[in-house]
Length: 424
Ligand SMILES: Cc1ncc(COP(=O)(O)O)c(C=O)c1O
Image 1 (tube, helix red, strand yellow):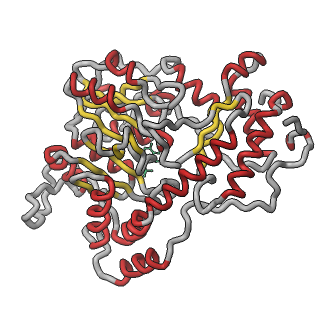
Image 2: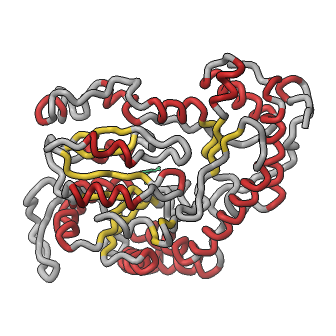
Image 3: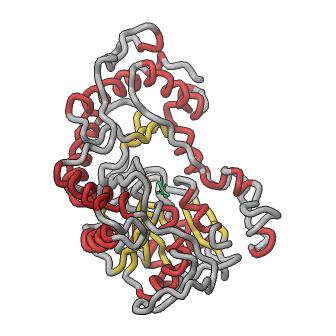
């Protein structure tokens, strides 16, 4: 419908009186009781009772044999790298598009990432590009179930098995996301979840390493705690047998995460219902690429991602990023809460400089010399970055229909009047 955009002096679509509720919804009485119980007992360390319960219940909820709670999701990813026996100079194939930690976790074990491009519809690493990136040094494929939707796992697993590679699932955004009915984190060899503030399971900070493989577990576990390796039935001997870190989850935040886990099916269902309402309201919006979800790979409700259609920018003769900047300004003027999502992993300084630990380590000392991160090699991911407007979570509970309808109304208003939006 044609209307004057707030950017040009029209009435904002979302009135200042509309309030959006922050994630997560407040704990109920049983959740609060659990957290109080954690304060009132005496073991607050990583070996505390709520940490053990969180591990046990998460493993049961997700369907994994083993789960180790960590202080952040990136630590769980590091355990995956160590568990898959990835070492100095080894290569891990991963996506060009994700949050920083999906790639920096590889550096933590002195290995290096090899980035591949994504598919436009899902923004996930493109299985068709994996084989060309495999070298004798490749140890693993690290897939990211980006935006709360599973990657296309069957072709990825087939390539990995053919080439004897491990598959690591970065499920940090994807608690409860399904691939052909299977939960993510149960398909590859091991996986990692994040419990940070913004995730479907919010523990403030925190994470979870999962695997069904005893050997992967045995290699990963020492990295958790000073590399003080010992048989499970023996006491500590306080000896660092290798390089380890202190990645344990403290007991109190574990209790908070446990309270979230016990209602996760409910909050996920609510987030998905809101996501679907927003998606249905946006159907048919001109020049808008709606967020990806499919019958085989349904969203867990984590994020609704808006992209502008590159064909429209081309037809108007404006740059993708200029158009996207203009749309962002227009949405802001309409009162739409959103944040920009733009992380082309290889563009980060650490990869451009090929220097993570000083003196060019690990590349200069261990890596294949022709590893190349010059930009331009990931055109689809770059288009996603240039067109991506919105990866926010305000469609999530406790927000309800009124907020979803307001979000949809403001987005439609801007996209239906794109001719009023200047390139910025
Ligand atoms: C895809 C992805 N991987 C890894 C992480 C790292 O999780 P954390 O922040 O808990 O370390 C995040 C968190 O934002 C993420 O979104």
